[in-house]
Image (cartoon, rainbow, N blue to C red; front, side, top):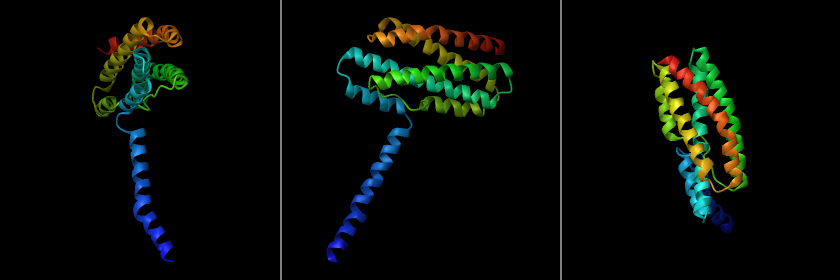
Length: 192
């Protein structure tokens, strides 16, 4: 009887709080405010060679950008009354959703840790955009800048990446990204 009490006492006051702390820490790590930073740290630990780490960083940066662009597109579909913006946003969401799926599949095959959602910086911008009176114009400028950054990353990656599979995918994906950029720029120019 005394032994059962001791076991209960140990479980209640030692193991259960440890399990709760572990569960909260794991949840925070996985859904935390900056999953990009977490992915970068995990990749730093995994990859010894500089070129592998460079390729992993490329993947992390672009997965993060794609999440940001997809979330911005969803936001526009929800908040704009402009038919052209809604059409461009749907196109970007669809196209980048496909690219994100392919890039995450590549990352998984190479054991590269990737972010799980949009960046904290983008979340802050989204909060401001939702309440902005000039939503369409500001949204267009934000998606233009993000898309330009993605194009720049892909152009640089098409020459600097060491993994031939990744380099080939980047080169093949660039025309699709540029098509989206052309639509974004047309929309942006119309709103100026």
